[in-house]
Image (cartoon, rainbow, N blue to C red; front, side, top):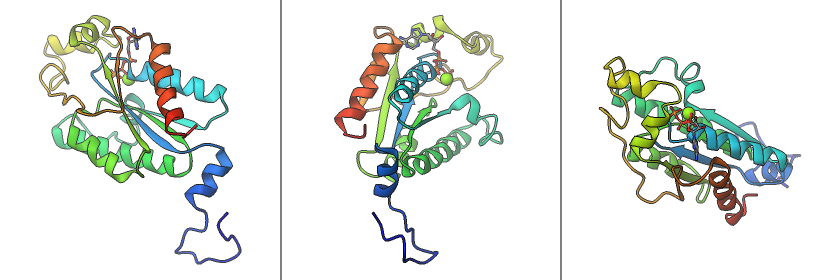
Amino acid sequence: MSDLSVGSLDRPRITYEDRERLHGHGGALVWFTGLSGSGKSTIANAVDHTLYTQQRHSVILDGDVVRTGLCNDLGFSPNDRMENIRRIGEVGRLFAQTGTIALVAVIAPYGASRDAVRKAMRPGRFIEVHVDAPLSVCEARDPKGLYKKARAGIIKNFTGLDAPYEVPIEPELRLDTSVLSPDEAAAKVIAVLQSRELI
Ligand SMILES: Nc1ncnc2c1ncn2[C@@H]1O[C@H](COP(=O)(O)OP(=O)(O)OP(=O)(O)O)[C@@H](O)[C@H]1O
Ligand SMILES: [Mg+2]
C-alpha cells in the first residue's frame, strides 16, 4: 500500500496497485471495433454481464450513448471521428486507471487513432477486439436501419460503404460474428482478460 500518511497535493498518494487491490482485479480498456451491425454493443453487453456476475467492475462506453453526450458536438468527418476516438480513449484510460474494465463499443475506423489509444495505455492493458463479420452480413442485420438509409443516400460517409474502415492488423482478438454466437464471442474476450491475469 502506498504511504497514506504523507504526500503532497501534486503527487498521487494512491497507486494503480492500491486501486486494483481494492477492486480485486486489474483495470483495462477493451475496444470493440468493427462495422455497424457487426455486434460490438451486443458482445460488450454480454461481457459486461459476465463480469458483473463475477463481481468485477466494468463500464460500457457505447458509441451511440457517447455521441449523445460527451461527443455531441462531433459529426462524422475524418477529424471528428478522430476526436471521437481520442476522447473515448481518454475516458476509457481514466476508467482503467481506477481499476475498472472499460468496454468500448465504438466503430473507430482508423488504425492510427486506435494505435494512439493503445500507446497511451499501460502495456497489456489495451485489448483490441475486431468484431468482424462480412459487410453483407452486417447489412442484412441492419439492426438500426442505417444501411438502408445509407444506400438510399440519406446518410453520407457511412463506414464500410462510402467511408473507410481500416481493418486492425494485429488485434488481440478477431471475432467472426457470422460464425460465433454472442456468448461464444464474449467467452473469448473473458479468456483474454484471464490470460493477462487481469481477472
Ligand atoms: N454472433 C453475433 N454477435 C453479435 N451480434 C449478433 C450475432 N448474431 C446476430 N447478431 C445481431 O446483430 C446485431 C448487432 O447489432 P449491434 O448493435 O450489436 O452492432 P454494433 O456493432 O454495435 O453496431 P453499431 O456500430 O451500429 O452500434 C444485433 O441485432 C444482434 O442481435
Ligand atoms: Mg453499437
